[in-house]
Length: 333
Image (tube, rainbow, N blue to C red; front, side, top):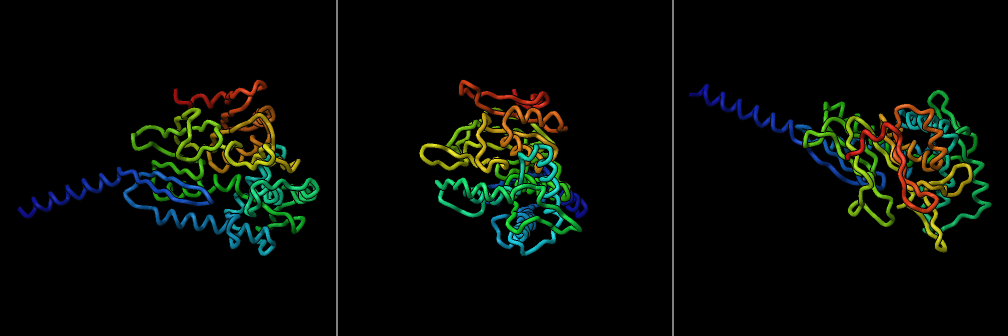
């Protein structure tokens, strides 16, 4: 009888353990001035460890924290880099070169002048043209290098802003943590940038909505332009229809052209990039938004493992879309 009871306890324990291993957990919160949503299959609650991962990342690349490494580098208080900073820096340099300078994290002084950075300004602030012209002297990734893991910049006024790449990199950082904990099925989303692996709770590929480019929408009332069906890939979207300033009935979008110092005006409304890692997807999405449709098509000719979905206005002001050949396989019909 005792052996039978022991056997029943073992069966019950195995059953409970097996059930917990199949449990999908959901964790959400705020980070980088935006929201994150993480779904993962694990027998453990990893939320506290995820918080620790975020803290490590913020300590390196959070422009809005004056004590972070990137802030200290910007204000000439530190020149020693860490691995997270170097990964971000070298990827930014790569995309800068491949996009003919359309993607440039050294645009920080001008982004701040427009009020889109960590220095808050009046929402209707329009910078003086002479001020922009002067700040352009401090812009350009050719003014930055890393030597013996130490940052070197040509002038003290030069600064870096990580917004257009670090959000994607933080997605990768959390995803890599989950992989290290043997989590096989998960989706990490931070501010709309996503990395997913394995299957969703229904045992299917993850389904991700691409927003219609509609102004004055938020997380709760978005509409989908399309839905993509995807796994083991990263997805990032950049658009000019949510974040802008308005002055005398003219809207100035937050995507700044690094060559002019002014918000880029072209036909693109949004760009969605699918890539192997979210840092790359994030950076290229911004690069394409700053380049316009035709130049982006030319940039794509020299890129591998990047698929893109563009939403744009045609000459008649109608909303149209264009996507690379291999993107179509991901669209849910």
